Length: 472
Image: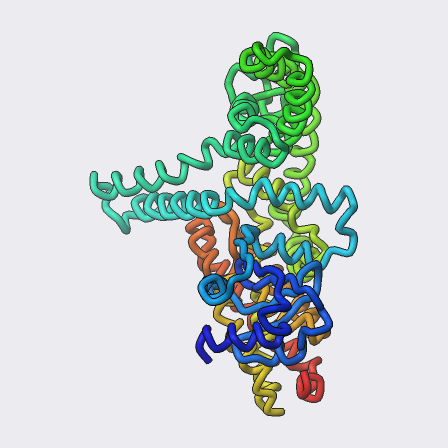
């Protein structure tokens, strides 16, 4: 079925063109607002070839997979005189919005805000991580003699390192700018807050006021970089409040000069006295907790922690808790030069892939062509780390496979944690994350994916009966 034919059938089953109020698309789905929801033929839409699933929320959402959603939207714009818009949100944050039962809670709002800060930075985070990873690979190969240490290879290594460092070296500044955009502060001032936290003058000030530990600088109450991204986010949040308060009280003629000066003086005082020491303590605790898991000399601890983290990650995503992990990734990257938590959690998507393959074979036996078609369309995206089509189109509607997929993923997570796999950044999981791994971790990460595929398949094949997939 062509995209044009699919779109025409979707519009008809939505109650015709006259029932559609507006349509938008995100990465993997069409989101439709209709005038009369009772006219929607939900079951018929779900059975269409090319449709991976439907979700009913504030809008009626039709999951069609990455790439196809954008193509259908472009066709819709040219074929129908109906308002359209582009939904610029990450697939994970969209899932959080759909599945959250406590959308109005402060906790959920906080997690959503964290996502809004970091999601726009993901392309740069991924690119920088890949560049740094390949720069490190060249360095390792030169050290072992596998590559010559000549000028040509040195230039390639340095260019790759330059590209990676151009973002990650100034990560706090980019975080400050993005946070200012979210909180409604002046973006340049947000960047200044991020920059201030990593300036060497912090150390000099800390020495003068007696908060610097000369014997162990990393254990200082106040030092350059203390608090990491948590400190920057808190600082920019206060910046937004203070800037707005100052602007209300400053005459218009003096606003351009006085508002930023007064605001920054207040914010830097709070940064030095309260924000950086307090968030630094929190960051230190987080890193120490991760170190206990990653660098534990007890393999049982590594296996158990890796298994549990991987097995529970997708339920965390559905509850919207995954956004809270992003600052932890950033803190660990800054503190240790790598991220161990991301590779472990990435195994969750691989477990979904294994479970989906098992369901495919059972659907084939009972001749459920629709489910086979859904899985066939969703699997390529699943291998590449985009698990939404598999989750919403296959495992979650069936219920039990969503659990068995997590149980299978746990084995891959246990292996990855045991092998101390580290990444240089974070982003999409699956096979596309291999370049994000540190050079000596790439193979073990891939093996972890294979382990998750296998156990996700085996556990699902054991516990899911053919009758359970016959009429889905």
